Amino acid sequence: MSKPNIEVVVKSPAPPNLHREGRGFSRQELQKANFSIEEARDAGLIIDLRRDTNYPENVEELKRFKKEYEEYLAEKEKQRIEARKANAKARKEAMKRKAVEEKERVKELEEIEEERAKIQEEIARREAEEEMEEAAEEELTEEELEELAALEEGADLISEIEEEKELEEFEEDLIESMEEEEDEGEDDETKIVKKRPDGTTRIVKRVRKKTEEETTKGVKEKAEKKE
Image (cartoon, rainbow, N blue to C red; front, side):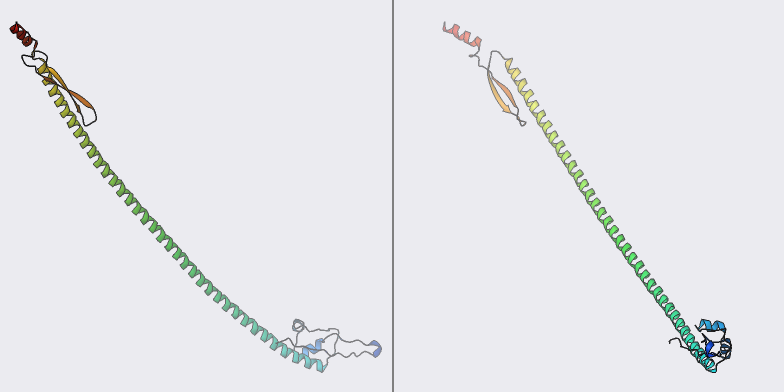
């Protein structure tokens, strides 16, 4: 609804040589139409307080204008109320939309935190499994080391037994050789080379005892008999 228009009709009572057109409604015309000066000025009417005339057509025009202007103001107020309602509704919808968005954001953050917690849990589980596997490997290595140490101890024991056995054999051979050398006469010697398991060699001397005829005494007696 647009603002109503109004035109003022003014007749100058002055003689033609003093002709002057009026510029607005007079105070008397506004009073007849129940218009105050403030209301007229707020409505955008031109008021000419210098005039004291009262034209019926201006009064009727003011009454018509006032009626239409009041309808115009009521319509504008209605529009303002509707605009306020629309703004309130829009704000309410915006608040609801914001609340929904905030709820979705919180839900998304919770999902992210939950996913992060799952990832951390999975990482911790894998690290625990790796630590258990490493511990198992270390235990297996220790067992292998113990077995290897046991084998080495067994090998060292066998080597010591073999060395003791060879030493006993050598001592026996040496004693036997010394006993044979104490017999009369010089006996033939036989050297036997024996290889040890560790790669070294040892010489065993075998002495064959000479017969009575082969000794120096026997040869001498044999020569005397021939004479």
